[in-house]
Image 1 (cartoon, one colour):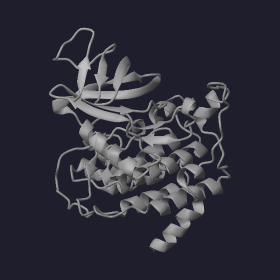
Image 2 (cartoon, helix red, strand yellow):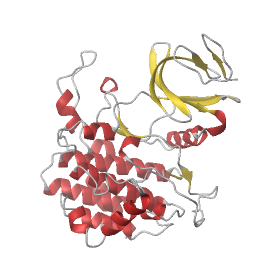
Image 3 (cartoon, one colour):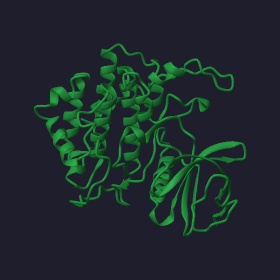
Image 4 (tube, one colour):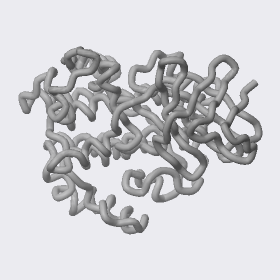
Length: 344
């Protein structure tokens, strides 16, 4: 049984700062607000001496049951890049909650903290490798995101020595694409808009059912953004105009779209655009292309991320920042090549 204790009891309100949320086993003290949305709030919370993040949403409008399902599946698959689930529960009919580790800043914030409003090429490639690995993990669990964007990826905390690891989070729009027998669901045709306008796929603009390919297309848009600093449609809110800009980026505007990016980005877009609804993306081939960019530009696997430059002198609990190579996080590059050859 899950219940709530507040300093001023009010059954009609979500819990607030100073209140407590209890699962069947643990009690979480709400310390401060981290973020707020239309359906709920994210708090920093405390359980004993340990600090966590807890997301609380209105029971009737909550997407947290899907989030919990994704994170439970990720735990079963030992995923490295999907935000872990600590606890979850509900207080009917008031709210649902999930408890997660505290993470660091998201990629959108980290990018816009840079003077140039973009990442260096080395950081862009390392971010691409890890975020692609996260998306592959999600797909392996049987889910698609339908809302891949920089703000839905966050780094771990320095205190936890995970500041070089990127985690995928926020699965409110996620959907199972496999049935109970592990077969791909057929397309449902037109289903309405899903996602974020800036990063939505062309199929999303057509309001068609989305698949794994669409997560990859959204991933590519944000890859271009973090590499070049901005997307051509960054200041446009009208979806039809954004859609037209994305189509132009594949035609006469392609060279301009990719002009500040490595030449191999053109190959990535071609690969992603060749996918149809039920196709499994060629994750290994894409990782191999990213590694080729790394090698061609002399980028060392131990290179610092841009956000480490600013905080490299910071120490937590007297511990020095540890250097971890990118392939300890996503696998060795020759693995991608072998897997690609075996799947040919």
